[in-house]
Image (cartoon, rainbow, N blue to C red; front, side, top):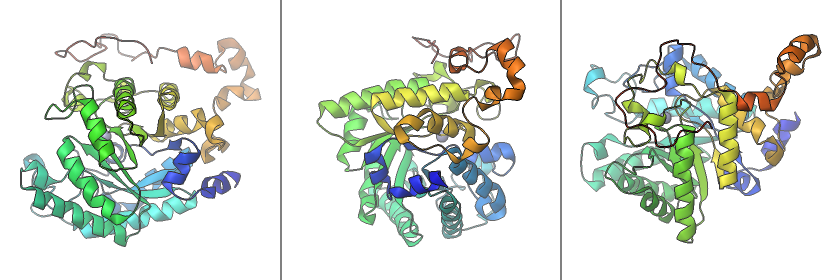
Length: 385
Ligand SMILES: [Zn+2]
């Protein structure tokens, strides 16, 4: 239980960040879709009511992997969120936002308490902003969510996946009224937000909202995300601002969309055939190390990141955090090849060395598969890790 004691020593997210790196969680909706509990396209989290055991198990895997915090899994669910998606339009919403959010918050708190983790509310873009309605309506949508989450006593807020800095500013302004720590991240890459606002301007404007933590999530792979984070860091440093930095990239490699505004959503393989692009655990561990060296304190994953990616962050940053993730009982780093009964295998293939895995260039297993999707601008620099 030493890990549990250590994890609960510091209470809130800001206290944790002041002591060292924080491990975030990973993909929920896209992972639930793969497992058969979420409908692609709509990406709405009714599974928290229909298949609660499936969601609970996934959250538990993130906590076991070493996540300091898990989300109340109700991302992308606001009134009308199904109606705006023509392809997946349904006759009626089966559950209300209130029902989904309540179930999600209760479930997340139960699971988090098993491992001393925190629970955050994830608030994404709302349909009223996308539909171009006025600021007042957008604000009201966020106010409704704020009220719900305060009622269910989450530990902090993460405003995430914003494509427009204006909408993020409105969201953070509302969330700050909740008197809880606020993180905000945009789904931007090197080309900036959907209106062409640069990475640097987005960074400064995010920091000036007064959010405690700022950064990026989704749409780009860990290599591209690090490039964007470097620019965010330089911009806030130059402006004399010092929010905590956060990065939660994809669990897939997709260098060819570095300069595409829609990121991996534009790939021919999205969303059903991205598997061959999976980042392996060592690549994700190296991403965590580089992010930390860059000054990023809150490191997690977005779509495509499974529990073993989160475990890779926790294990890579073990020296800084001084906490072994609970999963170490079954999966210590390189434990398989350190096992005495496998020593012949170990000798023959030298696979007990961290270096072997870090330098490995994994094959795709497809004789005639191209490394990248066709039709995209070629990535300017392509270096492993
Ligand atoms: Zn994502």
